[in-house]
Length: 88
Image (cartoon, rainbow, N blue to C red):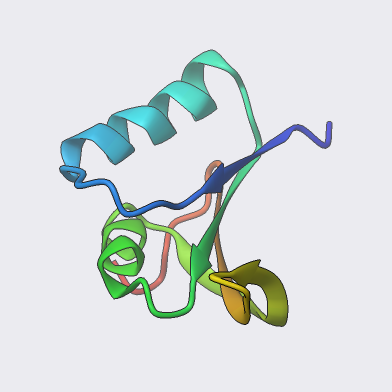
């Protein structure tokens, strides 16, 4: 099964409990296998939340998208159901 969901990051304030509950819902209720988060390279606050939730850095996409008419890099973080982040 290749089920996956993409989460596009934005600059809204978020508490750590909310993303962890979301991950649990996706894995337990929706039975998804993998979740990916796409984050602007300079969005370190969102990156810290993703890491705290067990997501790991997977790739850097250079000049992937436009923001304010400028090319921006995108970082991809992911988590796979049943696998633990080695940094936690």
